[in-house]
Every structure is written in structure tokens, then in C-alpha cells.
Length: 258
Image 1 (cartoon, one colour):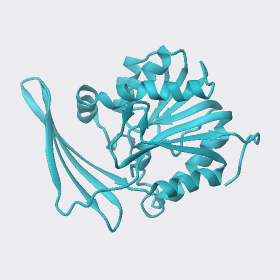
Image 2 (cartoon, one colour; image 1 turned 60 degrees about the vertical axis):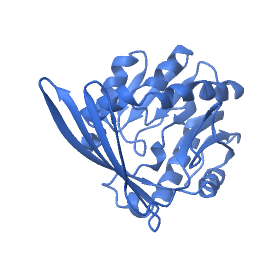
Image 3 (tube, helix red, strand yellow; image 1 turned 60 degrees about the horizontal axis):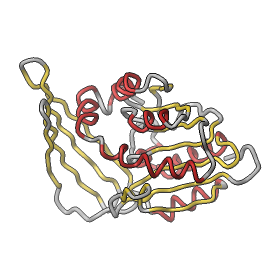
Image 4 (tube, one colour; image 1 turned 90 degrees about the vertical axis):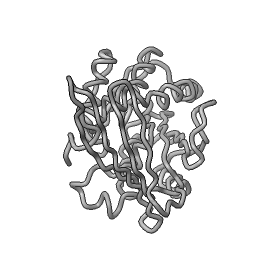
């Protein structure tokens, strides 16, 4: 696994500057879910924590936070933004999960096919996610919750869809293509960021596996979770291709084996 291969410095900077809506609009609904489950001021683990925006709001609400992300550049931003939280540059699939009351992962993180050093990632991605669910279940206290969102359906894209966004000192170009046969969504991302007098170019290619909601629910229930599905976080509704999963650990068993 190459830790610094994705969301390198320039894309991390652009993502932090231009794509803040998702975590900020998700916060209220996530805090409501935690409160409804009587989780207050305990340890929350955020997988794929990115630039720390959600971690910041969790800390403000008096939670202790451990953030994990595969991008060193993202973690650098998060550490600067939320010095009160703990952060790790690691894969969510290999990091050691401490005993905690909640695990959160927003922004389609579980769809990404980033850990390409493990051949099973591309050939058996659902199996890898199932193993992650077992590890999370074992890390959660009784009554703890796992909250995450995923892309669970895709639109047929016969030709690549292209677009761009720009800020004061950056431009990002993107092209996406959804392969219905493989269920893989591929995004080609080209960034231009002003550094001094000139603009610096970089390029990344991200792939995401598109899952069916029923398959994710089945995996969670097999682990032992009680599962609810939502179309968003509170009043913040996600695109129709996305679902929010709220999985609660009710069993008094401390661990399960895979």
C-alpha cells in the first residue's frame, strides 16, 4: 500500500478549500444519531477523516476523536485544524481500532479501492469490507454505533462525464466513467495549483466499487449489527445514488470471530 499515492498535497489543499459542504452539512445529523443512542463525550473513531472538519465539530461537542486517513497531506491539514484530536496516517483496513463508542466514515470512503497492494481488494472488495465490519464490531462497546455512507447504485454513463471547478489559486478538472459490467466508478482528476508565480500540475486516478444496499445490510447483519438505512444525515439529503447506514451493536458479546 502506498500511503502518499492518493490525495497528495495539491488535491488535499483543493479539497479542503473547495469541498467543505459535505462534512459541514453532515455534522448536525451525525450528532443527532449519537445523541439518540446515548453516546455523549466518549471516544469516536473516524475512518477516512480527511481534513478534520467533522473531527473539529465532534471535539466541539465534547467527544474524544481518533481520525484515520490514508493521505498524509489530509492528516497534516487535520492536525493543524484540530490539535485536540489524535490522527493516524494509516489504512482503515489495517489500523488498530481501540475500544470506542462510535465509528464514523463519511464521504463514500468505503467505496474507494485504495489498498491496491492487496490483490483481494479489487477481486473481493465486499469480503474486505465484511472483515472491516467484524473489526469495528469487536472494537465497539455495547450500544455503540457505526455510521457511514456509500454509493449504492450508479447511473449508466456510456461516455465519460467531464467537468471542472476553480478557486482563487486552483483549478481542478475531472472525468468520470462508470463501468456497469465491473461496477467500478473511475475518476480521473487533474489539478492546477498556483505555487509562487506558476501553476503546478498533478494528476490522480481514483476508483470506487459500487455496491447494492442489500448486500451491505446483509454483511452488517451477519456480523451482528442492527441496521437502519437513511437517505441522509438529518435534513442533509445525499444524492439518490447514496445511502447512509446506521449499524448498532446490541449484543452483549464483546467479540465475534470471522
